[in-house]
Image (cartoon, rainbow, N blue to C red):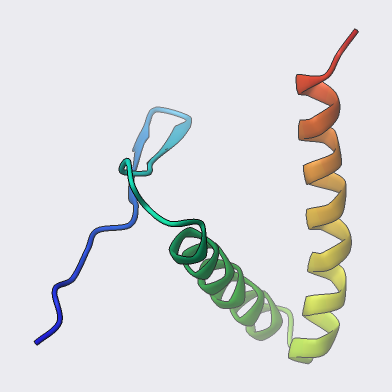
Length: 78
């Protein structure tokens, strides 16, 4: 049996959500986990709103691009 590694540990304190990523996690493993979480979120969004997965994916792509851009802008304020 292959050894299982813990890639992420998440928890919530009050209104704050924290994700711990252990040292040594590869970018490939981290990318897989993030992509898998997004897949489940999009699938749930599609079911909750009675729309196709493709429509939900299209809406999520726009929202994710906007959120990432906002985070970039916040970290690179002049």
